[in-house]
Amino acid sequence: MELNEKQLAANRANAKKSTGPKTPAGKRISSQNATRHGFLARSILLPGESRERFFELLSSLLTQFSPATPYEYDLLDTMVVTRWRQQRAWTLETASLIHEQQRQSNPDSTEDQPTQTMLAMKKLALPPRSLEALSRYEGRFDRQYHRAADRLLRIQAERLKNAATNPASSENKEDTQSTYPEPTILEASSKPNRTPLEPRSEPAAINDTHST
Image (cartoon, one colour):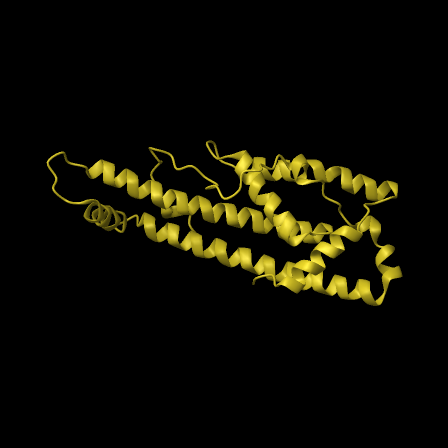
C-alpha cells in the first residue's frame, strides 16, 4: 500500500504538532528510543553488512511514516527488518550466480556472458535449489513488509481521526507516545540511493533446510 499525498501531509502535520513528552514517565520512554534501534541493528545485521546503510533505510522509513506510539514503532521495526532481509536475499541471489559462474569458468570456454549466467542458474536450480529458496524468502519478506505498512497506516488514520474529533483526549495520552530522536542520532547518512548490502566475493553455500 502506497502513501498518497493526503496521508503524507497528515503524517507530517501530526509530527510537527508533537512537542515530546513532558512528564517523567513520558520522558523515560523517550530516552529509551535513542538505543532502541541500536539493539535492533545488532540483532539483524550480519558480519560484512553495513550499519550505516541499515540506518539510512531506518531513517527514510521514519521520515515517511512518522510513527508516534510504541505500537507504531513496533510495526515500523517490522518494516525495516523485512525490507533489509529482502535486500539481503537479492544480494545473496546475485552473489550465488557470480560464484557459480566463477566455479564453472573455463579458460577455453566459448560461451558468452548470458549463456554462462543461464548455466549458473540451471545449476543452482538443482537440489538444494538455492534460487528457489531465495525466491521464497523474497516473497515472504515482501508480504510481511506490506502487511505491517497497511496496519500502520490504518492505525495512524484512526489516531488522527480521533485526535481531530477529541483533541483533549489525545493530549492526555502523551505518556504512551514515543518520541524518536532526529535521524542524525540514528547515524543516518546523507548519501541516498545506495545498495544496502555488498555481496561477498565468496558467499557461503546456501542451505534450504531452514526455510519456512
